[in-house]
Length: 144
Image (cartoon, rainbow, N blue to C red; front, top):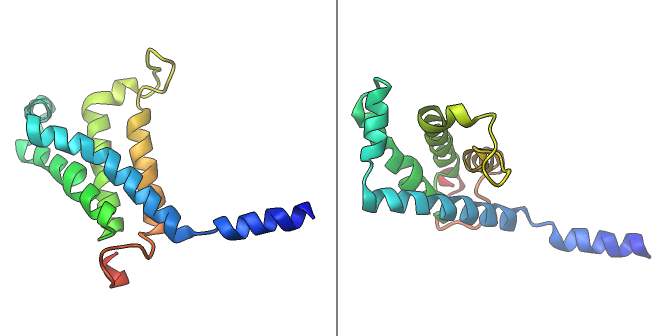
């Protein structure tokens, strides 16, 4: 009896397309707040930090790709895998520029100091393997 109930629950909740949609909304929606902040406040901090590391300033404008364009595309279900790669690259650069010294540190509340970066990277890695699913604004699966 209990096995039948569990099997029924598992069958009803087995929806990879809905899981992909929820993943896309979470990843894209939360990261878009970071991008929105940069659109309104500018990226001078990033440009200055890049200059301190000897990296050309134009590289800093990639943050708009990784934190604005890619999240929007992911939410819409368009080019999800390339967008996930853009986010991974953006997070690696952010870690290298700002948080590399915090890699083995804890925050004041006991959380891993770089958990937000790891969160975005891991959700992007999951999206790389899962894909956008069928819930997308574009019908052609090659563009999802």
